[in-house]
Length: 261
Image 1 (cartoon, rainbow, N blue to C red):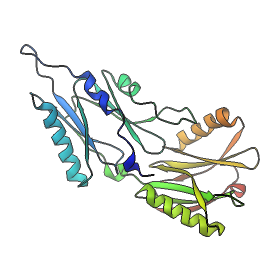
Image 2 (cartoon, rainbow, N blue to C red; image 1 turned 135 degrees about the vertical axis):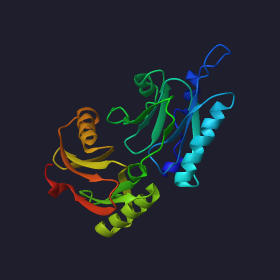
Image 3 (cartoon, rainbow, N blue to C red; image 1 turned 30 degrees about the horizontal axis):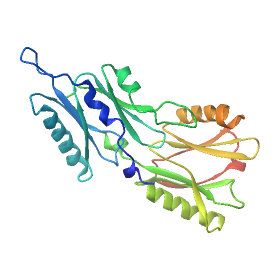
C-alpha cells in the first residue's frame, strides 16, 4: 500500500462556507491550500480578492508547494471565512474539514481514524481563512515510515522485525519482510503493523498474546492500547516498547523477553 494512493478526504466540503460579495460589501478574501503526498502538512496562500481570487489563491499555494517539493504537488481546495482543519490518522493519512469556528472545522473532518481503538483523529493544524501564508516545517513534516513483520505461519510470532525511517511505505514493507525472513529463516512473512511520523507501540495480554498499534505519539499510543484492550480484546494489557517511525533504523522486538515498559 502506498500513501500516494490514499484519497484526499474532506476537500469537497471546503466550498460550503464561501460568502459571495456584493457591490455594497467589502470583498471577502479567498484562501487556498495545496499538498504533497510525501508531507504531513499543507501549503496555504490567502488574502486574494475579486472574481479570480479563488484561482489566484490556489495558484499561489500550488506554486509555494512546487518551490519546496518540485513535482507531485496537488491543489486541494479554496475557502472563504472561518477555518480549515487538518487532521491525520494513526498511520499518516490526511483529512480536511472547514467551519465557521475552529471547533466546527475539526468536527467537520471525516471520521476515518482508529476504527479499532475509537480514538479521534490527531489535529495537525487549524488555520484561519485570513491567513496570508503557511508552509510546512519540512524537517518534521516529511513522511517517514516504519513497518513491523512476523512469520505468516508457524513458530516465531513472538518476535517482530521492524524497519523504520523509510521514505515510503513500499520501502518500509520490503525491508521489514526481508528482515523477518532472515530473522526466522522462513519464506513467507507478513506486515503486522505500520505507520508514519509517529510510533509503533508493542503490547502483550493474556500471558502469551501479543499486539502492536501505530499512533502519532507515545502518549496517544498508550491511550490506544488501553481503549483496544478495554473494548475489542476485553483483557488487561501490558505496554512494551514503542518504536519511532522516523528514525532510520532496524529493530527486532522480542515480546517474551521484553517485560513491562
